[in-house]
Length: 144
Image 1 (tube, rainbow, N blue to C red):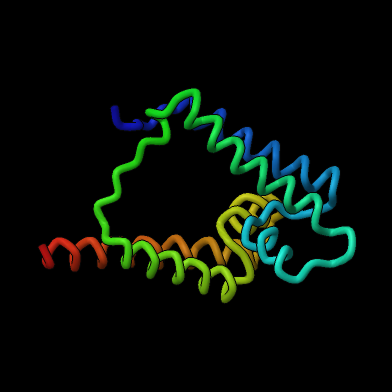
Image 2 (cartoon, rainbow, N blue to C red):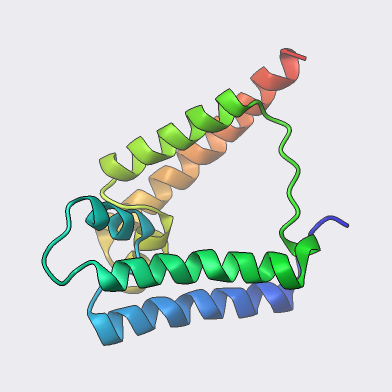
């Protein structure tokens, strides 16, 4: 069974993401940008590690819980080589450093705070992501 778009579940998921980002901002005065949260673990400040570990553990546990209770909802088929996945992951990592954040930081938190920098970042990474996806798809299709 392949996952399909469901407006109700998508709305609930979006609301949960917004709620978690709002809770982190309200209770910890922190932005829920995953690249910044992970990056902070590599250059830790005193007293700044526990919430980062807890947040990331919550993400992992939520994914594992979804897989445990409804494995069909997280079933994914990837028809790309491991090298393409590694290259894509590295490009995303470099992009988050160049853009000073990721989709969660700019897209969820930055746009909700009306940040013009986040708006420019979201427009840029969505446009570039679409262009790269189409280009790689065309190149990959021709290589078969």
